[in-house]
Picture 1 (cartoon, rainbow, N blue to C red):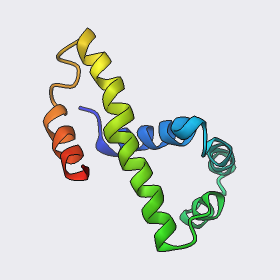
Picture 2: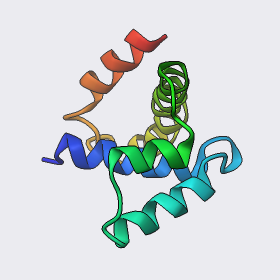
Picture 3: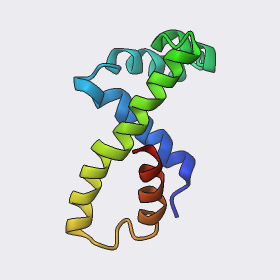
Picture 4: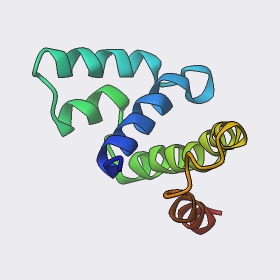
Length: 102
């Protein structure tokens, strides 16, 4: 079973690289380098991505949640079409979470 933290971490990295034609890609590269240099922290993440207010965090979170529920859902459906049992364990929870966002 895949740990949820790993899955969300992977999804966040995917989002930061690919959302809106790479809107956050430069920031991701800076943040990733900070991680490699053991210089990362929540404050570093906030600074790199300009998340200096609750409103900016809410907007960022909404973009991420929509990316999960729209973009990655489409990709997941392509995988399921090839291997229907791939997401069997997670599909109900994922669909329920996405329904709450819409």
